[in-house]
Image (cartoon, one colour):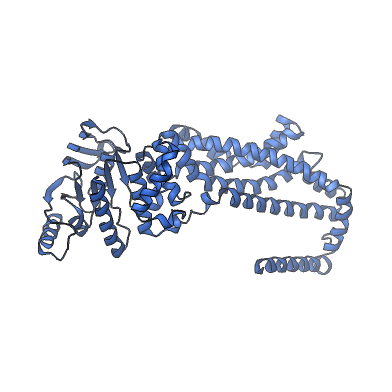
Amino acid sequence: MRAAALFAGSLVIALALWQFLSTVVFNPFLIPPPLVVLQTAAPMAKSGEIFRHVAISLARVGVGFATGCAAAIVLGVILGRIQLVNELLDPIIELLRFLSPTAMIPIAVIWFGIGELSKYFLIFWGTFFIVLINTTAGVMRAPIVRQRAAQCLGASPLQIFLLVVIPSAAPYIVTGMRIAMASSFMSIIPAEILAADSGIGFLLQQSSVLLQTNRIFVALLTICVLGFVFDRLFRIAVDRMLSRYMSYIALT
Amino acid sequence: MLAVRNVRKLYGVDARAYLALEGIDLDVAQGEFVCLVGPSGCGKSTLLNILAGFEQASGGSVDFEGAPVRAAGKDRVMFFQDAGAALLPWLTAEENVRFALRVRRLPKSEWPAIIDKYLAMVDLTEHRHKFPAQLSGGMRQRLQIARALAVEPKVLLMDEPFGALDALTRRRMHGFLLDIWQRTGKTIVFVTHDIAEAVTLADRICVMSVGPGSRITQVLPVALARPRDLADPRAGELYKRVEALLA
């Protein structure tokens, strides 16, 4: 109740500040006031235009994020478990991870064109390194005492791996996925601005060319809401399904 | 049951090498309660890890029931001070015991009875649905005992298991462990730096010297009836002897 009230209070302050900046400090063209943005959004929602862009962007994020997580978890587990592979690949990873998805846009367009594939690739790229590093760290930090305890109870190496190491790494993997999801929502925008004919980023770019600041604000607000909603959904899903793996971090 | 002959343990190579153990000889009989006592860093835990099979000796031999120890196995269950790390924190007390049965590959129909038996033995029946984080330090150690007993080991290897508990709980755990030891007849090798703990528990106290090259300098039999009272002059005398050896 208190949290909800504070959340509402925070929104009210933000709206008031927005209105103030729009009408008093700057002007309604540079910063369209809240009501104008709402009036712009209504027909865009009614015609389905905005949802079409949202759906396309979400699909890109979804595919890139899912494949990026899958690949990163598999490789991360290997890196965390096999020292030699880790030593061989770690320097490359440490170099490549500084190439943000944005930096990869020009080459992605040449490699994969401006179709869906280049967007999938860019989101995959951004997700992959974040989840990879977290997964590797989580697997490597599975307490040796816990593994040994399982070993002397008679657990086989496979059992130790599946029943002890992976669950021990789960909080790290999930944290990496959450960070990567936020970063995916951020990196889909430049990718669509520079190389797409649909999606929220495209909407931004198109509105900018036509100097439609009100439509730009609709797109910006949409990004905020999307990121927020999906982060919440992710947390709820984790709480529902993985809480027993997450809640003990304080203990060890 | 356990026969350790001239064991040495060397870490690292060349100039950086560190000789942890040298010339360790130790025999542990079936059903015996042996305490290894020594200052921090004397290699007691290293020796225990070698007995468990987690580490290999650099020289000498370790035999268990006549066969060389090559890897860890459920005949010799190790018992850790940090129960929070050793237990599976995402499983409840009951599920932690069940985990032991699962890796032991027992038919599922036998599980409930065994789980009930060992949880009752360590007095955790009421707390069976709690997670380790919800248990007190002493309860976590009891759960570790239950889980270890569930695989029916022959030897319990205990690495300062009660070192992190408060004095009162530790004393209670001593009574508890002795009771279980007497009822089950397990062989116990118990590492501690607490002389009082060794005097309270052991059939024999093995005193280890400081490293590098730690060895067992003295083996003292403890011929006192249990439960022991540290106020007993004979216990006090033994305490002083061990203390003098460690000084």
